[in-house]
Image 1 (cartoon, rainbow, N blue to C red):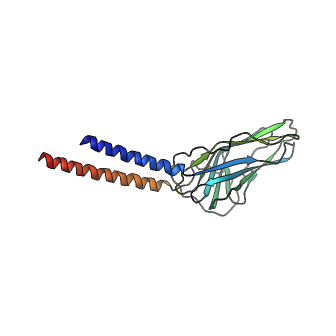
Image 2 (cartoon, rainbow, N blue to C red; image 1 turned 180 degrees about the vertical axis):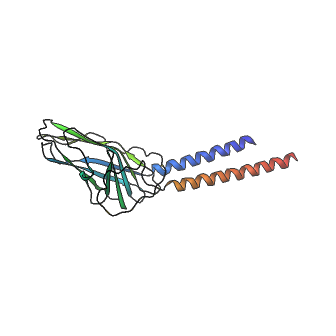
Length: 233
């Protein structure tokens, strides 16, 4: 009897785990960096982050770039270095968060980073990296992550060279939900602290599955115990 209950419990737990994995694995997207500018002293360089191959439930609502690194040939990045026609941008502590009031389903430019090349530089190239790029639709997807994206800006006579693959990584486990805001496109707020996770609400369905499974296990255990009690009497 105990063996039967144990087997039922193991099967139920496995079903819950499979359900959680399927929720995350169903979604993906891709991102890439590009630029048409050269590394010229005193000039500006524009680097664009483009989204593509979006398969994110009803679309992407938020994007977080954990860290943006640039070569010493560029001047320091500020909140005003970023511009976007579709996303509200927040830059703080070296990272970037993009928020959209409506879900984004079509590929296109998410944000443009404008860098100023320092005077007197002699380097032949300099790199720009967007690290730990994570997106969420805010509903059922969890945090979907892609590889770090890097582009090398070259001086006159060279081409810009992306140096990272474009294949998306497997998604991470959904984290604690937060309700996303839905503003239009206000100005970039100065010196804000980036959230530790992206807003999402996909965990509610998982909790419902777990609670339901536990209720089923409890009911089965009660029935089995009652039958065993009747046999003993």
